[in-house]
Length: 221
Image (cartoon, rainbow, N blue to C red; front, side, top):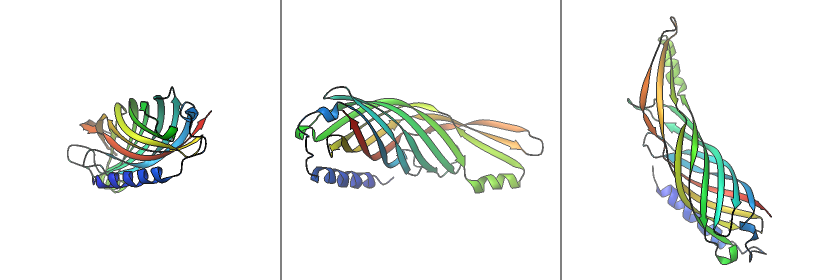
Protein backbone atom coordinates (compact mmCIF):
# COMPACT_ATOMS: atom_id res chain seq x y z
CA UNK A 1 0.00 0.00 0.00
CA UNK A 2 1.18 3.50 -0.80
CA UNK A 3 1.07 5.17 2.61
CA UNK A 4 1.50 8.58 0.99
CA UNK A 5 -2.25 8.51 0.32
CA UNK A 6 -2.90 8.52 4.07
CA UNK A 7 -0.33 11.25 4.74
CA UNK A 8 -1.61 13.54 1.99
CA UNK A 9 -5.25 13.12 2.98
CA UNK A 10 -4.44 13.69 6.64
CA UNK A 11 -2.48 16.88 6.02
CA UNK A 12 -5.16 18.27 3.72
CA UNK A 13 -7.97 17.62 6.19
CA UNK A 14 -5.94 18.98 9.12
CA UNK A 15 -5.20 22.19 7.20
CA UNK A 16 -8.90 22.58 6.44
CA UNK A 17 -9.91 22.16 10.06
CA UNK A 18 -7.38 24.65 11.39
CA UNK A 19 -8.25 27.27 8.76
CA UNK A 20 -11.94 27.31 9.71
CA UNK A 21 -13.09 30.26 11.87
CA UNK A 22 -13.78 29.72 15.60
CA UNK A 23 -17.42 28.90 16.31
CA UNK A 24 -19.54 31.15 18.45
CA UNK A 25 -19.92 29.96 22.01
CA UNK A 26 -16.86 27.74 21.87
CA UNK A 27 -15.31 29.20 25.02
CA UNK A 28 -16.89 26.58 27.27
CA UNK A 29 -16.68 22.81 27.41
CA UNK A 30 -20.38 21.96 27.24
CA UNK A 31 -20.00 20.69 23.70
CA UNK A 32 -17.47 18.02 24.65
CA UNK A 33 -19.33 16.59 27.65
CA UNK A 34 -22.57 15.59 25.97
CA UNK A 35 -23.69 12.49 24.12
CA UNK A 36 -23.07 12.59 20.38
CA UNK A 37 -24.12 10.63 17.30
CA UNK A 38 -22.56 10.81 13.88
CA UNK A 39 -21.24 9.29 10.68
CA UNK A 40 -17.69 8.33 9.70
CA UNK A 41 -16.39 7.62 6.20
CA UNK A 42 -12.95 7.12 4.73
CA UNK A 43 -10.45 4.59 3.39
CA UNK A 44 -9.15 1.41 4.98
CA UNK A 45 -6.81 -1.45 4.13
CA UNK A 46 -5.74 -4.65 5.91
CA UNK A 47 -1.97 -4.84 6.38
CA UNK A 48 -1.53 -8.01 4.28
CA UNK A 49 -0.23 -7.15 0.80
CA UNK A 50 -2.79 -9.52 -0.77
CA UNK A 51 -5.60 -7.18 0.29
CA UNK A 52 -6.49 -4.00 -1.57
CA UNK A 53 -7.91 -0.93 0.13
CA UNK A 54 -11.55 0.06 0.05
CA UNK A 55 -14.36 2.04 1.59
CA UNK A 56 -14.54 2.33 5.37
CA UNK A 57 -17.76 3.77 6.80
CA UNK A 58 -19.85 3.56 9.93
CA UNK A 59 -21.99 5.03 12.70
CA UNK A 60 -20.51 6.61 15.84
CA UNK A 61 -22.04 7.08 19.30
CA UNK A 62 -19.92 9.04 21.78
CA UNK A 63 -20.25 10.02 25.43
CA UNK A 64 -18.06 12.74 26.92
CA UNK A 65 -17.41 11.52 30.45
CA UNK A 66 -15.44 14.60 31.45
CA UNK A 67 -13.20 17.25 29.98
CA UNK A 68 -10.36 14.83 29.17
CA UNK A 69 -12.12 11.47 28.75
CA UNK A 70 -14.77 10.05 26.45
CA UNK A 71 -16.01 6.66 25.25
CA UNK A 72 -17.15 5.83 21.74
CA UNK A 73 -18.97 2.93 20.14
CA UNK A 74 -18.54 2.58 16.39
CA UNK A 75 -20.01 0.06 14.02
CA UNK A 76 -19.28 0.07 10.33
CA UNK A 77 -17.99 -1.79 7.31
CA UNK A 78 -14.59 -2.23 5.68
CA UNK A 79 -14.57 -3.56 2.11
CA UNK A 80 -11.39 -5.10 0.67
CA UNK A 81 -10.51 -6.95 -2.48
CA UNK A 82 -8.36 -10.10 -2.16
CA UNK A 83 -5.84 -11.08 -4.82
CA UNK A 84 -5.64 -14.71 -3.70
CA UNK A 85 -2.75 -16.99 -2.80
CA UNK A 86 -1.88 -20.69 -2.76
CA UNK A 87 -2.00 -21.04 1.05
CA UNK A 88 -4.59 -18.41 1.92
CA UNK A 89 -7.83 -17.08 0.54
CA UNK A 90 -8.58 -17.26 -3.17
CA UNK A 91 -9.50 -14.25 -5.26
CA UNK A 92 -12.59 -12.51 -3.93
CA UNK A 93 -13.96 -9.79 -1.68
CA UNK A 94 -13.83 -9.54 2.11
CA UNK A 95 -16.40 -7.40 3.90
CA UNK A 96 -15.58 -6.91 7.57
CA UNK A 97 -18.03 -5.30 10.01
CA UNK A 98 -16.04 -4.16 13.06
CA UNK A 99 -18.02 -3.20 16.17
CA UNK A 100 -15.52 -1.29 18.31
CA UNK A 101 -15.60 0.30 21.77
CA UNK A 102 -12.93 2.94 22.42
CA UNK A 103 -11.66 5.03 25.32
CA UNK A 104 -10.54 8.49 24.20
CA UNK A 105 -8.04 10.64 26.06
CA UNK A 106 -8.54 14.23 24.89
CA UNK A 107 -6.87 17.59 25.44
CA UNK A 108 -9.11 20.55 24.53
CA UNK A 109 -7.29 23.59 23.12
CA UNK A 110 -8.37 26.96 21.71
CA UNK A 111 -11.17 27.25 24.26
CA UNK A 112 -12.60 23.89 23.28
CA UNK A 113 -12.56 24.57 19.55
CA UNK A 114 -10.01 21.82 18.87
CA UNK A 115 -9.98 18.39 20.51
CA UNK A 116 -6.86 16.33 19.77
CA UNK A 117 -7.27 12.77 21.09
CA UNK A 118 -5.64 9.40 21.52
CA UNK A 119 -7.78 6.26 21.53
CA UNK A 120 -7.55 2.59 22.35
CA UNK A 121 -10.05 -0.21 22.70
CA UNK A 122 -11.35 -3.54 21.49
CA UNK A 123 -14.07 -4.95 19.32
CA UNK A 124 -15.57 -7.80 17.38
CA UNK A 125 -15.21 -8.34 13.62
CA UNK A 126 -18.08 -9.88 11.66
CA UNK A 127 -16.48 -11.20 8.47
CA UNK A 128 -17.99 -12.24 5.17
CA UNK A 129 -15.85 -13.51 2.29
CA UNK A 130 -17.23 -13.89 -1.24
CA UNK A 131 -15.27 -15.78 -3.89
CA UNK A 132 -14.76 -14.21 -7.30
CA UNK A 133 -17.75 -15.04 -9.57
CA UNK A 134 -15.55 -16.22 -12.45
CA UNK A 135 -13.71 -18.59 -10.11
CA UNK A 136 -17.02 -20.07 -8.94
CA UNK A 137 -18.12 -20.59 -12.55
CA UNK A 138 -14.85 -22.34 -13.42
CA UNK A 139 -15.35 -24.84 -10.58
CA UNK A 140 -18.99 -25.45 -11.52
CA UNK A 141 -18.01 -26.22 -15.10
CA UNK A 142 -15.97 -29.20 -13.88
CA UNK A 143 -18.71 -30.35 -11.49
CA UNK A 144 -17.81 -28.80 -8.13
CA UNK A 145 -18.97 -26.03 -5.84
CA UNK A 146 -16.39 -24.35 -3.65
CA UNK A 147 -16.72 -22.18 -0.56
CA UNK A 148 -14.21 -20.29 1.56
CA UNK A 149 -15.13 -18.75 4.89
CA UNK A 150 -13.48 -16.25 7.24
CA UNK A 151 -14.55 -16.66 10.86
CA UNK A 152 -15.65 -13.79 13.08
CA UNK A 153 -12.98 -12.68 15.53
CA UNK A 154 -12.04 -10.38 18.40
CA UNK A 155 -9.61 -7.51 17.86
CA UNK A 156 -7.92 -4.52 19.44
CA UNK A 157 -7.13 -1.08 18.09
CA UNK A 158 -5.44 2.20 18.83
CA UNK A 159 -5.28 5.53 17.06
CA UNK A 160 -5.28 9.30 17.16
CA UNK A 161 -7.27 12.14 15.73
CA UNK A 162 -8.62 15.65 15.96
CA UNK A 163 -12.14 17.06 16.35
CA UNK A 164 -13.12 20.62 15.43
CA UNK A 165 -16.37 22.19 16.68
CA UNK A 166 -18.10 23.96 13.81
CA UNK A 167 -20.70 25.15 16.33
CA UNK A 168 -21.66 24.38 19.92
CA UNK A 169 -23.26 21.11 18.80
CA UNK A 170 -21.61 20.10 15.54
CA UNK A 171 -18.10 18.64 15.34
CA UNK A 172 -16.03 17.66 12.29
CA UNK A 173 -13.22 15.22 12.93
CA UNK A 174 -10.35 13.33 11.34
CA UNK A 175 -9.06 10.04 12.75
CA UNK A 176 -6.39 7.44 12.08
CA UNK A 177 -6.90 3.94 13.53
CA UNK A 178 -4.85 0.74 13.41
CA UNK A 179 -6.46 -2.59 14.31
CA UNK A 180 -4.96 -5.87 15.50
CA UNK A 181 -7.10 -8.85 14.49
CA UNK A 182 -6.40 -12.36 13.20
CA UNK A 183 -9.21 -14.51 11.84
CA UNK A 184 -9.35 -18.25 11.17
CA UNK A 185 -10.41 -19.35 7.69
CA UNK A 186 -11.41 -22.57 5.97
CA UNK A 187 -12.55 -24.07 2.67
CA UNK A 188 -14.93 -26.73 1.41
CA UNK A 189 -15.24 -28.45 -1.99
CA UNK A 190 -18.43 -30.33 -2.92
CA UNK A 191 -18.98 -32.72 -5.82
CA UNK A 192 -22.27 -31.61 -7.39
CA UNK A 193 -23.23 -35.07 -8.69
CA UNK A 194 -22.61 -37.06 -5.50
CA UNK A 195 -22.82 -34.27 -2.87
CA UNK A 196 -19.53 -35.55 -1.45
CA UNK A 197 -17.72 -32.82 0.44
CA UNK A 198 -14.14 -32.34 1.57
CA UNK A 199 -12.92 -29.42 3.67
CA UNK A 200 -9.86 -28.02 5.38
CA UNK A 201 -8.30 -25.03 7.06
CA UNK A 202 -6.49 -22.08 5.52
CA UNK A 203 -3.79 -19.89 6.99
CA UNK A 204 -4.98 -17.41 9.61
CA UNK A 205 -5.99 -14.12 8.03
CA UNK A 206 -4.17 -11.08 9.41
CA UNK A 207 -6.76 -8.34 9.06
CA UNK A 208 -4.90 -5.60 10.99
CA UNK A 209 -6.71 -2.78 9.18
CA UNK A 210 -5.34 0.74 8.93
CA UNK A 211 -8.07 3.33 8.38
CA UNK A 212 -8.31 7.07 7.89
CA UNK A 213 -11.74 8.64 8.19
CA UNK A 214 -13.56 11.92 8.42
CA UNK A 215 -16.51 12.02 10.81
CA UNK A 216 -19.33 14.43 11.52
CA UNK A 217 -20.98 14.31 14.97
CA UNK A 218 -23.90 16.11 16.56
CA UNK A 219 -23.48 16.53 20.31
CA UNK A 220 -26.62 16.81 22.44
CA UNK A 221 -26.59 19.16 25.45
